[in-house]
Length: 603
Image (cartoon, rainbow, N blue to C red; front, side, top):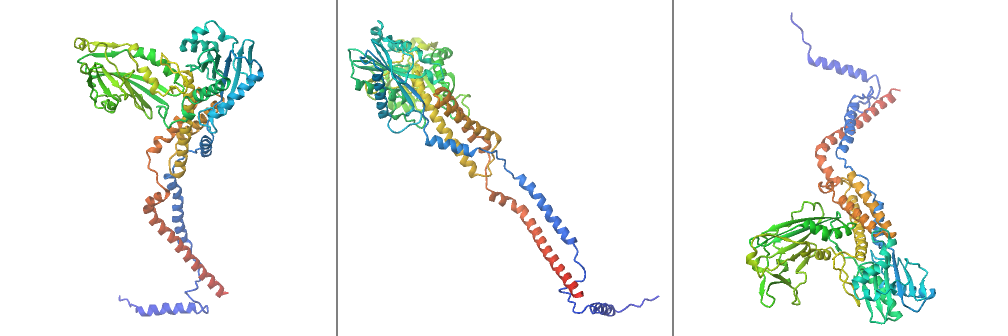
């Protein structure tokens, strides 16, 4: 059965007629500005759902690029740095002047002498105050020991036994400076050498009025003496000069600290590497029992310097170690000579394998002490000084590296061919490395100044007054380095906001500040050794924090760099989502306005 198709034009005409009929129901209806139904929320809801999903993922993105930073006490660091830079670290010092066989025997005379000594000390110290010295933080006590008894000034000093220097052994002891030094030490009661308190650290100058030439001597303990017929004014000046230039400044002008005056690593460790080098073992072979050398010669020095550094000692014996420089034969001295001009070429770095220490890790310092045994072809080998004389120690020192001593075997000229490659021992008394060690370790050997001289120290040990000066200056140097390092770390961390700061770094900085404050407190109380130990810990912790591996191993970048890295991944999509939200909100507002307009017309 055939269907009858309706023409298309007839359907469209019918629909248009129906629309015109509906629109004719409402007068003045404009489809462009009006709509009869309320706009739906489905499109707007879907758009905002996508937008908020991106916002919810933003915290996860920020968390993934978050940098952990342990809080650092920046204010405390700045306070410590400012206090160290503005206020020099001064130590309290106690001085005692004893005048024997003087006529004055009144308390007024003792007070006058005390005021006069203080006045002369102020002239020597000047207006400036150097770190590590006493400045004006000192007291001077005076004792007049005469036939009528002892008289003290207002500043009562340590106990002094009246008439102690009128003993019959005085004349005998004065003949030898070392004997009188020990005798005076026994009179002064030992001075409590092992005490960490300042109570036992009193610097004493004894002036003995005798009918002889004037001599001023400083012993190896914390005292000196002036003997002879001397007037009051020069005597007082000499006493003040000894107090300031020897006991306070350590024989250096103004007590100024050099930038690196002691070879101690930033971590407070020092490795002493002793090497015995046999130039040619075909001639002779020398060995040593270094344990005996360590026990006899080095143990007491290492113990004395323990507050300043954590010192470890190691040794080795090497063979086939010729030197790099050449020596010439001197007929007059019957020896081979090498001069100071040859010293830069003496150490043979290709053959001398000295850097074998496993204890010198991190920032520890290594000092090399080399005993060089020359071959038979250049034995005996002597060092000639610039003025033409041969060196008494036959050795030299290289700053911050160590030193070399040339040890000539006994009778090497007479019977060098018969010695043969046999094993020989170097005895501790034959080894002169200790004296070189004392020099290199910068224990501030006091050189003669004016008429004051230092008696020779036969055992080579460090004197107590040297340790006091070294301890004070080492404390000051460590605190300066600690303040500088912490200040640099503070500025570095604040300049790089995306630097990772681990909790360990924060603890090291905190402990360093506490150790520095403890060192300053001990210094104000006169505890030299305790202050040195605390300052060493403060510097070591500050260096550990500054050179922490977590700081050095990461490349830090700014937030702009981070944005440039992540923007190619998220910016295109985020931009389209944001534009869609703006466009959909704008469309929804327009359609809502149309609906409101229609409702207003319908009323």
